[in-house]
Length: 195
Image (cartoon, rainbow, N blue to C red; front, side):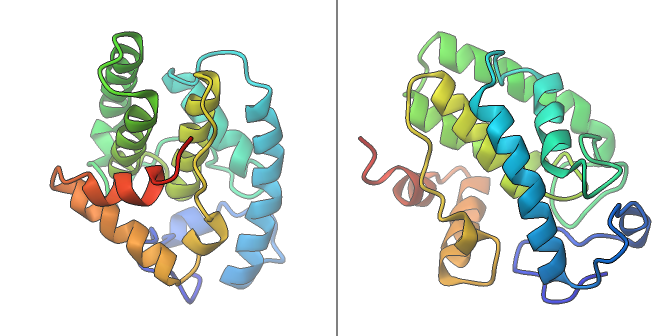
């Protein structure tokens, strides 16, 4: 539907595009601007969130709040397979497993909270539960998890990650390495310089 998709972006299919709420949007840049304004409302909500983010209903609520002024399917798991992610029929199960693992890792200090957040971020991106917005959603989810555990959010350089840049290429390469259980690039990229 939209041109100029950055590498690793999930294409929006025709059926999903029909659920675009603002009808004036014609280009990827217009969509990005509109979505970013929508995401700012969700960020304010997440900063005040008191319930644990480690719950699949909160995960869906976060996505809904990030995109509810943009897409009718905001907060709903995808119903088709994509170029990335688990088969759509397995999403609900995989997200529940992710939440159970996350709770166990945090409660039992399996990893430092920073390392756990990065590993969980990768897994959520790999599941790719929503039709679109998965990267931005998983980054906000990860930051909320860190804040809820007394840690500062990661410096994502999100403007660079949503466009065709060398920062996005490094991020995508690090995610792909983590797909093969090599987290070193992702840890280096996201955790270097953490207090």
